[in-house]
Amino acid sequence: AEAARPRRSRRRHAEAEARAEALRLRPGAGDALIVVDPQYDFMPGGALAVAGGDEIVPVVNRIGRLFTEVVLTQDWHPAGHASFASSHAGKAPFETTELAYGSQVLWPDHCVQGTRGAALHDDLDLPHARLIVRKGDDAAVDSYSAFLAADRRSATGLDGYLRSRSVKRVFVCGLATDFCVAWTALDARAAGFEVVLVEDACRAIDTGGSLGRARAEMTAAGVRFAGADDLFI
Ligand code: VGL
Ligand code: ZN
Image (cartoon, helix red, strand yellow):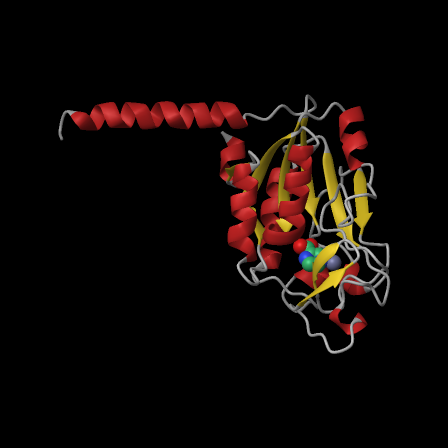
């Protein structure tokens, strides 16, 4: 056991080096940060509060400085949106229903266009963010993903934007891990980008096993998982 220790630690060291090398940022040369839905309705006290949602803000600010290409997304629903339980007689939040494009989780009314709940958190310090993608604005179709709405037809154009900015790899963070973050990460993979999920810059809703499912799907799709500190080595 004595003799095995240095060998093991050498291997661990090599693994840490490889991991650091794999995550080494390429600012201005292919890396982008996507910050998903850092809005008041997903923060404690909001209409669809995510536990610890506000704790991501300082982490996002810290990593945001590392990127020259920063994109924010904003859930942006009209009143009476199809994803709101209040739009379906007899339905309660967190139940599901069938819409034209498939199964839809129903939510409390949230992120209604122009309301305070839909606003980006005031403490976000990302003055260099160039693009804000609003999604979910079609009254009949939800959009967790920053790329493609739930009908899998209407695109936001984010894929073309990133490509035209020569982005090769996207780091994804924000709210909520198991819905908008996961769908954004999966669609980024499907669009051919390398994807790294910055886990401690995310928080989850976790309803009906959604977090476990999202993690499994992201792993299967080749999304890599990192912590914010991994980006500073
Ligand atoms: C989200 C549920 C409904 C999210 C948005 O940002 O993850 N979740 N709308
Ligand atoms: Zn929404």
